[in-house]
Length: 601
Image (cartoon, rainbow, N blue to C red):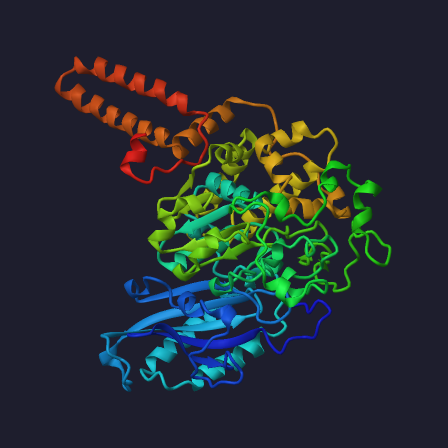
């Protein structure tokens, strides 16, 4: 991993941690190597304040219902660097009577423990594959005092992962798009747009392994996001520090020339006493105005691209406008550090600066982190949860993704309108579905070919995003952008990630052809797509589709018994089909009914 001009770290793995469940104290750290707090021993239960949720993340809620599970989670960095700490935890449980050495505090019938790796690099799948083997061996010892294997794991991982580049199949190991995503590709495109809009998106399913796999697979559709776009995705405040200054909202800290994390800076003009006083934002609601969070002057959007007046305030001290990306000096994929986003960017300005400035990525959220959903310093999130309480409190999220039922629940009618897919979008989704399905028909070449494979699918979404960005740069581009949905484009242009991207010039974008990849004249095939989309993704469409099937069966059965009843059954079928056509304009997201009363309303 690139050091970005700073001292090369000792190794990609920070700590190996064992978390257990104590019958009196609950989840707690039982072992850490090196110690989490250097002044204390390996067996200390104490934790750094910023990592107080570590035991509840590594040993997830409801883990006792599964023999084993895997968790991905993010922690804030303990040092001054703007870097996320990536956690991978493998959980197992074993019967207490099977232990060779039973310690005094083991009073339950089963022993539950997790072995966790805290890393500087987001190699989730690669770490998981190694960690599962070691966790299995650790449990096979049936003596948890044997910690030598854990120390060997630390040395082995730092040796094998050192120098590993964040590119290619190693980053996406374990993120199979076909196997992980139970959604249709129409809904995946809606999730893609939800993240671009920086909405509060909550994934819900059990077990945790399925939850984090689905969430991270969706994020892998964004070019460079997992490799370089999550560095500031866990910059949150623990509940005990809520009285501290919400520094990300301090106007003195919000500046286009700010190249580092907001929390990494100090305020020389303010005394320590002043900094400890709460300074609430102008909008105290979690739905506060975007202007409280933006780092760029609105004139950047209003002025034409390349206008000297719109970028004058973004010039660096050297006098060179930062709207021109410097040439890569690393030579690895032509990556450069974005002077506004602070992320490693390619020549197209990707990954987009989505998970920055208070927009969080939490693959798994513990119940103890519930306050983050309503924290005014958190402007949005993509998070995963298994506890039913998260799902019940839908008012704290803009969209709740029920992975088990493959449904996207959205309450806000305006947001549903933004997410309504255009005809070109439906063509794109149908194109993906057909090619993926055809590629899976051969049992001997299943998933091994390029076309229809995981890398091919990611390449299609990369093309979609490149074309979308290129279209926004065109003059008089209303017709081009209409193929992406005008409501969506209007909302996206005021997001933080788009404004950061638009503030810079990316010469490589000249190579991209503007316009939707599937733009074109409306045809009969599009009518069929819209019909199919409406039936599959609207509640009324599903009900009417089931009604048509039931009616058809009734026609056959009744026709055999009483031939005269066929005419009446056909009339009922025609009536159902007539009602079905009224659902054609329905979006692929649903407005949830939390209880029976809401359903009736």
